[in-house]
Image 1: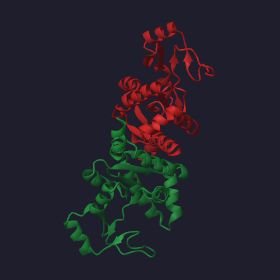
Image 2: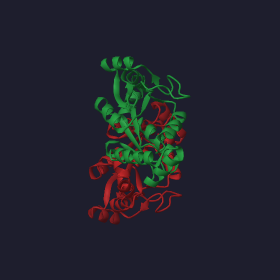
Image 3: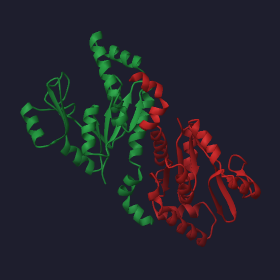
Image 4: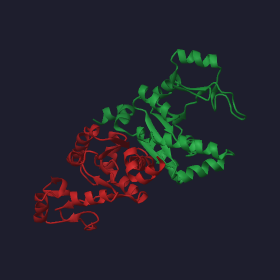
Length: 202
Length: 202
């Protein structure tokens, strides 16, 4: 039997990170994949918790050996998701969650076609703009650039399996928990998990 | 937009009826379809709540007009599910739940291929036998007949989308709630329900 692989994607400001934190604290059978990155740690960030901080050389060597399920370069920094770690965890029955963007999600889907994609939406463009304004000291220009990026992200919503609208935060977290829980109850998963029971019942 | 159609099936004694009662009281957007039957009401049964009690003539006339989504004859009594009522409710966005056996589920699937089938299993054959013994004064022979019927039911589990094992009742109810909740969050359902939001966000 094997765990499920989830990717969760959202425009910046939709509340994805807080939702994921609640999911991980409420559900002990799902683990967040920790990305590898070449960018230096920010104050407070912990190696192995927030990211695996590695050198450019190490990253390139891992990339060459095909150890990344997906990888990207953003503003000159590299980010990657370990294929090996995820495969091992899934084989042991643990569900894995990747917090990545739609491009990363598309890369993952090619390798694991059964990946379950979850897209988080804000309740409106105004709400998104308000959240971006409230959480940073960014200039109006930077915020507008983020809004433009959000529109681009949202245009890919159709590539995902589930859509959760983060209007009421608690309800959105319950939605996320329900999607993860239900995904373990599909007949295929259950017959694999409980093959002894089914053999006995037949 | 339209509601989802669920069929829920279980061998006698698996705890389906109690689980359905909890689901209906916890989730106000799903309604149980009330079957039509020609069998006389048992003491305490209410017309329109437990069943629509109708005459054989009325049943046959409804059957002729194609008003039943599925129907069956059991021990000389007829049972049927109204197609019209379900279609109207679903069009208004309400989810509908049918408590039927695997044969009924197969009939419904032919007409509504997107029906979501949920199968409830007992944790073991011994647990099922114990429950059948505890809840009735039936003879050992009757109980063994029910056990045989249960095995026959369970052999059809692969025709269903989800399997819930009723070992811990509360956990099984949470499973059922999660399946129903998650089914509303598929991208197709969400895009239909929130088409205005999506148009605005693009």
